Image 1 (cartoon, rainbow, N blue to C red):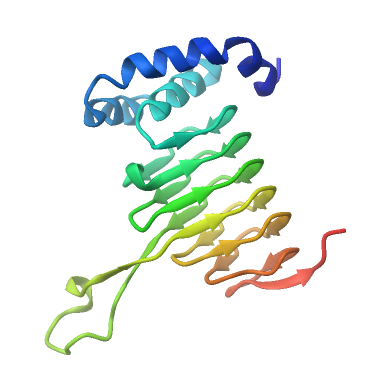
Image 2 (cartoon, rainbow, N blue to C red; image 1 turned 120 degrees about the vertical axis):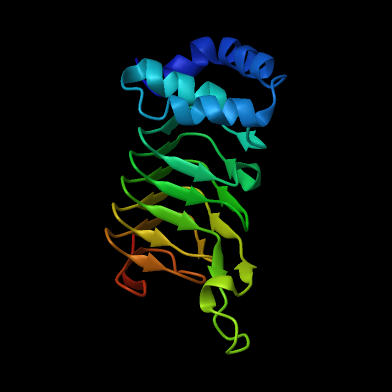
Length: 189
């Protein structure tokens, strides 16, 4: 049974369980999410989805969160329908992250929505200088290859592929993007 069919039949039941869990403090549900982050099989995937739905602002249907994913500042994260975030991804939504529909994020990718300033006074170590928050927006129908880094302020248009090990920043062009920094290398027909 595909994920879409599963949500077609059991979506209301899953939403009910998530709603019931939402009465608990978010920190408790986040603790449970982290506790079950390594749980294998469909059961682990379902538990992670139910817990995540009870925590974040907006979570669509048929969302796959792989094993050992780390999600920080979860209150600033929204995820659309038919999204897959594969194993060992790191997501920090401090500056806000919006993931559209039909997005696939391969294993070991990072989405970081803030950056460190390094231009303040010379007496302040870089480590302690202020943090600059910037949104990350992933529009619909995107595939992000393994090991890619999506940095603060990135906007990826719909129908875009990000090649493996690509570092992105700023607004990208529709098509296949690759490299460090990312640049368009091919159109998608």
